Length: 173
Image 1 (cartoon, rainbow, N blue to C red):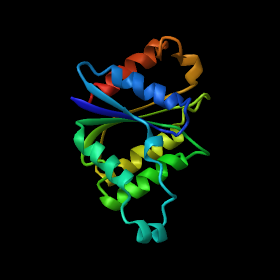
Image 2: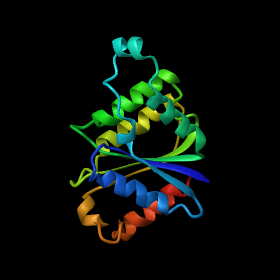
Image 3: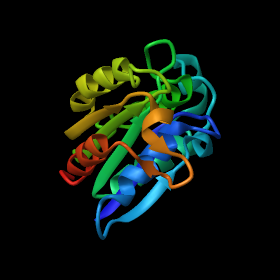
Image 4: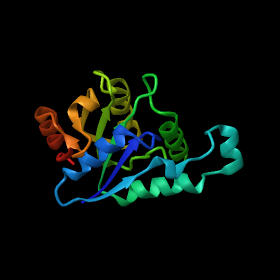
């Protein structure tokens, strides 16, 4: 199984990237590509920019990456209760190529934050919208209080209940 794992965050210290990477490692025998959305930075989407630029090559590459894999893991960072601007912009450009951005791929959607909410607000939005963009959401999980529940040195969850829930979620792919 070829998996694409990414954090919907542009932070170089993204805890969501750490979570997505760890989650992907729990899928036995998977060939995993960890994607960094910083490699797909484009001008802010607008109709005027689209008229000027068409479909940027980076958006086309991102869409192609999704097409090449058997499953997707995305861990969402939350900015003011919503998607990060970097992820939303990449998504908006890609959706102009084809509204079926996720190409009927099975997906596991995750989120985490330093606080007790675990970025659950954005995760709820992502779960609700993914099917409208041909995302086959198999499971979702919010990890609260990341620094209390994740061992940074070992690169894995230390909370056994969350670890088991994550294992079960990603193995639904």
